[in-house]
Length: 391
Image 1: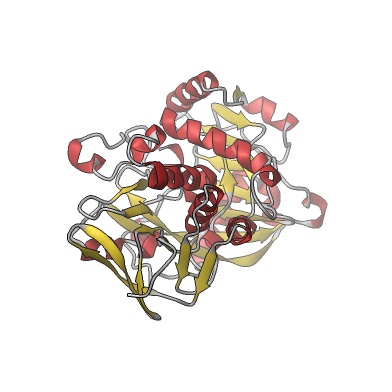
Image 2: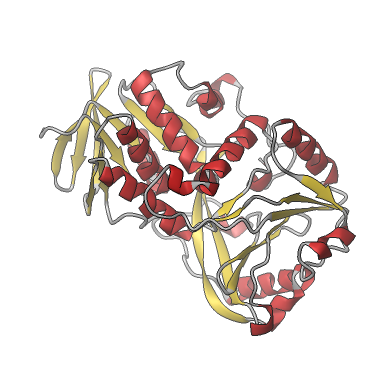
């Protein structure tokens, strides 16, 4: 095998480039391999929400700290993440109010800026949001939305500025393990030796672990969304609305709104990452227009521009797997992001870089994302809601 820079990262999405940037900040010069180009996978399809509402306190604390980084991006990285503090509204009805109230109480103990509002108080934030059918609404005034593509390229620019090489158009065929230790990779451009390998290939990363005999409880689900251009009289941005009460979401873009479903339709479960339908159907568009009429009726006067479908690599408890891989010293993974990778990407990259360099025990905040939690019974409880937005 040809020599490498010691650490090789598979994947140049938001997670792979964040890991690379944070390794470089610690003096390492990893090599990043990407089969297509930077941000060619699921990152570019992300809605880009940066919020803190989780039912798990450890994850909520990570989201709190990640939000602080997004808000002061230029203090940490090159380029821009396009962050906009438009605020995040999360609705509740009779079936979810108790859980949302418990989450908000826990968040306040963590120092998260959040509050509960009554339906009649929403007009002061944005009168275009109709909430008369809700029993309460959680409001995070400092949260908001960022640009996933800008963020991904900013991580890549930071890594490159510190000497990291990102090789685009190089696909990985196999991770090579010899005598219980990672030895390198077989790629479309030849073999590469490595002292350590990080599998951050998103929905396409599981096959490398399966080749090594590991089966993780990760499945793939399709998540379509429609883009509606707001009418000229309503062009101003609105807050992010995570409409848990009616299972919808509304995400502001410059002059348009992304509308989708928080949950997943049965037909969109267990899809193939290479062949799933990437477009949005007329039926789905009409479903989202109906949701808009109920929560943000002004969008009914907007123009549907089309849409697309992203894909989640869902772990069974809706939390990532970020850890060393058992049985292969020097091999690490950051997989099963379950739709959470974008908002947590600064922290996941930083913590995994520290874990790689300093070893086990250096990053207790990653303990909840352990590889073996599904076998030892410590996986997270998703009883509060089937929707990963609240996991």
